Each structure stands twice: as structure tokens, then as C-alpha cells.
Image 1 (spheres, rainbow, N blue to C red):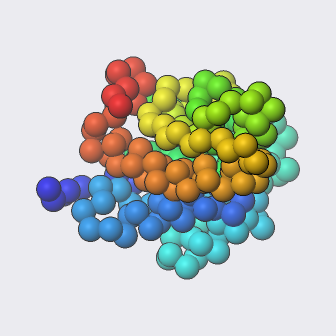
Image 2 (image 1 turned 60 degrees about the horizontal axis):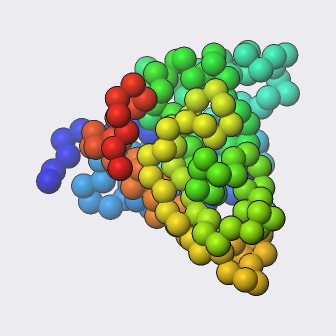
Length: 204
């Protein structure tokens, strides 16, 4: 199948950008139905910036400390993403909750990846939460973003066994391998219309 048009994707990241790199790698494959048009970050020291430069992707830095309120920051962040040019926003290690003033400008077209099988273990330190609870299966979830903490509709998940000798670090590494696999797949599903934004029923 030949895709005549590609979905414009903007990635927002705060740190090392390993999922950003997975999306970069995926877009380079023939017939991939999306393209990353820019990176936006709140951290001028984010390693994701170097990945963007290497891939020839423009980047913008929008630091929270420059703004007096969360709403002002969210609005400036949205301006940097450029709603009029963006079909999908992908959060990749972005460590802030997006507010209504941001989300309203993208009509639900914002997704995130989380290192747990939601709705279990939302928020920070999900891998340690899983270990503390004693679950035998963990994993990762790509989901739409709403105003809650990891409460949006699930798009795709992948399970990872929790081993008896796992630490948070070792479990995180195995989950990360699956994150790199399912995040590009989730973007592909949206780009091809196999998954609809909230308001339509999300398909597996």
C-alpha cells in the first residue's frame, strides 16, 4: 500500500529521548505513514535535542520558568508545537501534566506512552510501584492524553513478565524495549485511521 499523505507529528520530550529515537527510526522506513516535523522540549539540556539535530529535525525550547502560570506556559508550548501544522502530538518522556489550555488546541490528538499496563500504576515510578505491589506481569501502554494523570483511552499495550530478581532498573529496561516497539505502531494506527481520537471508539 502506498501512502499519498503523511501525518505530521510533533514530539514533546524532556530527557534522553529514546522513544523519540524509536519514532525517528520508524519514520525512515519505506511507506511509514507519518513524519516528525519538530521536537519541542522544556529542558535545554535534554539529550533528545541532539537526536533531533542528528536527524535534521527542528527543535524548540519552551522553559516553564519563563512563564508566570501553568496556563501561560501551556499556551506557549502549544504555539511552539503549531496546531495548524500538526496532526498528532506525541509525548516522549515529557514530565509535566498538560492543562486544558494546551489540550483544547489539539482536539484530542495527543498521545503518551507509560511504563505500566494502565489503569494500573499511573504516575511516577510505575516500575517500582509494580514491584512493590508484587505483580507478575507489567508492561507499557500508549494512550490518549486527557487532563488526568494517565487516564486517557488506551490505544495499545504490551505485557512484560516481572522476574523474581527484578529491580526497578532491570524491569524498566525490558519494558523500554517494548515501548520502542509499540509507540511507532500506535502512531501508525492513528495515521492510517485504524484508531480514532476520543469521541470515536478506540480499536485494538
